[in-house]
Image 1 (cartoon, rainbow, N blue to C red):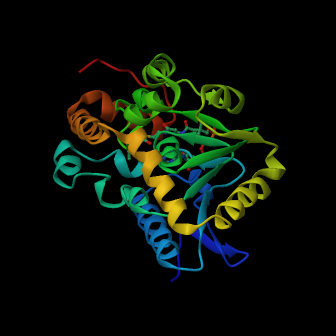
Image 2: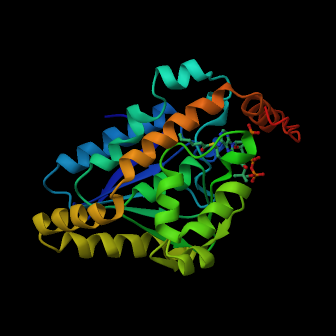
Amino acid sequence: MTYETIEVRTEAGKVGIVTLNRPKQLNALNDQLMDELGTALKAFDADPAIGCMIVTGSEKAFAAGADIAAMAKYTYADVYGKDFITRNWETIRSVRKPVIAAVSGFALGGGCELAMMCDFMIAAENAKFGQPEIKIGIIPGAGGTQRLPRAIGKSKAMEMVLTGRMMDAAEAERAGLVSRVVPIDKLMDEALAAALSICEMPGLAVMAAKEAVNRSFEGGLSDGVMFERRVFHSLYGTEDQKEGMDAFLAKRKPAFKNR
Ligand code: HXC
């Protein structure tokens, strides 16, 4: 399988590594990338030689969010009609073997949400996490309003979602968003060591453990995500969504009108 927006390789014959690769757009997550990521993860999941996966980005960006250039022209009818994001964003949740996010640089919006869909995160010292959707007239739409409060508590999550402020790696570790922070040049070594240690564990127990922890984490999540998706879609009916995205693309300050 040839991919255009990701790079795929294996380490030691048992760890599947996917590197997000749209460097010019800071790995902005478009449909093609999410489709390719889903296909690659499913293939690793089905491969009996693979025991664990790692998703990573570049030094500058894990992923700077969903692709604003693609989203800017969407209408409410588009996003509701096609149930925007369901198609390929949910794939990662159906993967049964563990997926580690190795995060360096920006993990914003859908990028932060993608990292949170992984089973745990190891962050480089330069990692920055945020849900800045509010600044472009929408809200997180891939589980961010549900997973962030579960991960770091309501107050911090609410502040981040309402103000769009970013959290650095040290704060993310204190808050419990990432399992640990490592020097940037050690990020892949550390993620790989963790993956290899998981590969040493009994595979069925690994899958069962993952399933059990997720059961704890995800109780009541479906309703929350569905509610979030409907609200997310409805914001495509606002003028401020158009203004926010247009302003971002034109590199000017948005003039919001609260309508
Ligand atoms: C499309 C993006 C992008 C994005 C960056 N780029 N983020 N393109 N979608 N999310 C592009 C820029 O337009 C620019 O293209 C190039 O990547 C480099 O970005 P710069 O802004 O020049 O870099 P820098 O000044 O270093 O700033 C980095 C940044 C900033 C802070 C990460 O790019 C930024 O704020 N990006 C948007 C972050 C964001 O709002 N994410 C949430 C998206 S909404 P050119 O062509 O000019 O070089 C979302 C909703 C998810 O994720 C809902 C579920 C699907």
